[in-house]
Amino acid sequence: MNEACSDEEAVSGADRKVMKCWIIGAFMFAAVWSFGAACDESGRETFSNFLKELTIGEYPNYPIPQDVGMKIDCTFPKEGSVYDYKFLIRGKGQWYSWKDSITPLTATNINIREIIVPTVDTVRYSYLMDLCIRHHRPILFVGPTGTGKTAYVQDKMMKYLDKEVFVPSFIAFSTQTSASQAQDIIMSKLEKRRKGIFGPPFGKRCVIFIDDLNMPAVEIYGAQPPIELLRQFFDHGMW
Image (tube, rainbow, N blue to C red; front, side):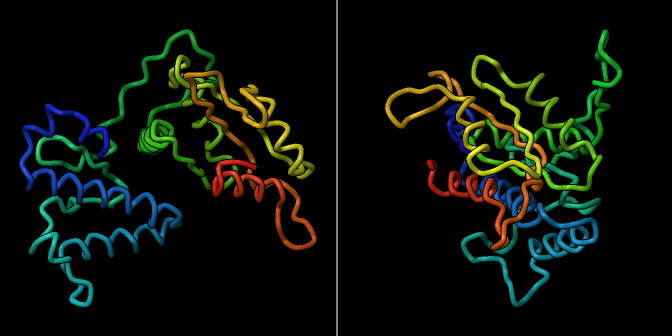
């Protein structure tokens, strides 16, 4: 939404009604991938049905806010799930199926073990990764073992990040990883700028991928110190 509003040509040609639709659509898309992101398969179906009905005013106890108007103009498509679409700030705003974003595989001279066949999932999660990386937001991929989480992230970071802007780094946690080890590994990826201040090379952003985040051993009080260290960093921007 910020990117769209920074485009003077797009904003100057849009009236208040169109911009209102953009904002509502962007919020609805964000709701799917924040409130509904952690749902399992059955939970996603329930959440999808609820959100669709909520946005067309099917719940009298939860009416559409008056500031929004009598109805929402950019409601979700009837077909499929709310997870099947992304919202594009184009024209009056539109929902675009992830299926239509799949491009044919054209890679040549590549090791077969490195090939990732484009699917709805690869397109969807690559888009969400790109969105979070560009806007400096952390993202967590959760799922069963062997479903391709690591492969998707590594493919994105190694092949599609602009190396003039981003510095990709990879860390793998294990049961033996301690908080001090995690801190030392992360700090080793950075440069010292001045006393107590570290960061990537000037003009660049460091993108750190931590694999097997759940692996560190649980201590006597039930915490996992390396994860608590990361929580502190996200809360305070320092340690």
